[in-house]
Length: 128
Image (cartoon, rainbow, N blue to C red; front, side, top):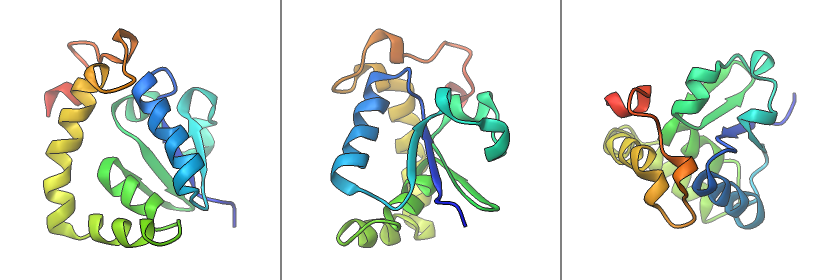
């Protein structure tokens, strides 16, 4: 089986900073790749999907947003694996989604973010 793939927005400085942290510090057993360099068709994803959230693809299983982050963390060493297991709990994931959407809408204001990170006003992630 191929290694799972974690897909993020490589045009966003904040997202790229987070991906570098994941690759260098968390070091999950997964590929961490910007969607701009990923074979989205092979992953079963669309540009609309990956521009709205991070995705984790492991074989037939695909998750987005906080669930994707939980899946990614569960492929790492302790304590990250424990954090992923906690984030995957349904009540925690339910609370994490509104926070995730807020971060997505405001990622241009986050540390390392730039104006290029801002989502357009009509972007799907802004609706939620």
